[in-house]
Amino acid sequence: MSDSDELYEENESESEENDFQYTITSGPLFRTVNTDFIQVSILNLFNIPQTMTVSIIDWQNTCNEDEFPKFGFLCGEIVNDPDDTITTQNGNGNGNGPIFSPPEAFIPVLTPFTFTIPPRQLFTVQAFLGDVFPPTPMYEVRVTFPLNVVKTDPIMVNTWGISAAGVIQAGTRMFNTEFKSFPTGDVRFMPM
Image (cartoon, rainbow, N blue to C red; front, side, top):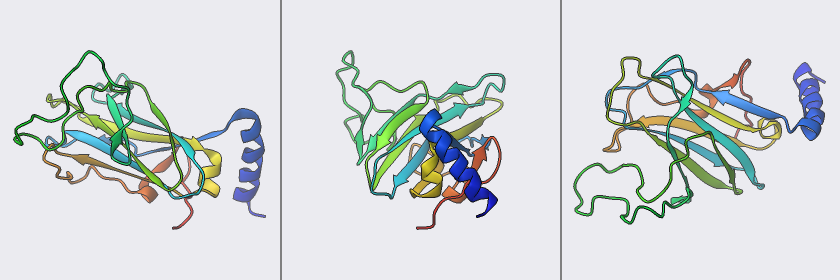
């Protein structure tokens, strides 16, 4: 038995007692001037639901760890709570303007976004950054999930910085194997 197997078994028994969680991070990413929103896509390839938590952290003020406002989508449908005070729908109505804009009539999540992803489903989280380009344009993506996902349940996580026109911005993307465990070590995902 390898050291990592022993560690997993040890953590698996702790999991039952402490609901052990595992977090991966993109580390700090530079926001390009044309990055209007950040998208995190999580694909649950296993046959059981998985509860995940997504943080998209605003490090633009490097002294505070603030969350960007976020919207979640499952099967293309928004999962945020509706905002009963807004009566308009998403989109500008005339076909002009940005392709991607924050959904109207829904309340953004201002804390880490926790959601249970059904089996074999894609869940995406979008964080809209606003129009002001700060002097320190940094952000970080963190995803937290149960320990059993690392060893047995294939979960794929990717992130991109995207313009309002839908163009992926160079240097703002990270694929599944590029994320690092938080605070130490490498992430070990099962191959597809």
